[in-house]
Length: 120
Image 1 (cartoon, helix red, strand yellow):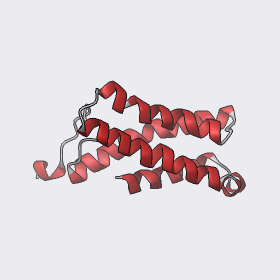
Image 2 (cartoon, rainbow, N blue to C red; image 1 turned 30 degrees about the vertical axis):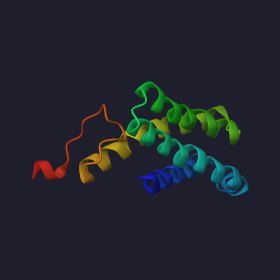
Image 3 (cartoon, rainbow, N blue to C red; image 1 turned 90 degrees about the vertical axis):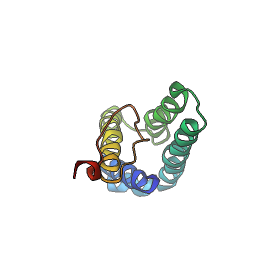
């Protein structure tokens, strides 16, 4: 799931940043990928596993995803709005794909998507 999320994060940032900006800011992008995607998903997973309250393990990674990229990459208002829209769409998309095809429901446990294996 982390690999898929990294890929989607890459696609979103590639859409938001021009080709030249993407090349120039690749070091910041690498840092953001590690913090936002890898650390955020691990924090959420272990927070849920170790029974932290949902209002700790879910909003912290979400806030990192929303706040860090526009600040670190110094995005304009227009690019920030585009980034926020795409990032908010990506979480349900990832959850729906993994829940439906693999039965992995922990990404957004409060949103029930049936597993295709149970429908057949």
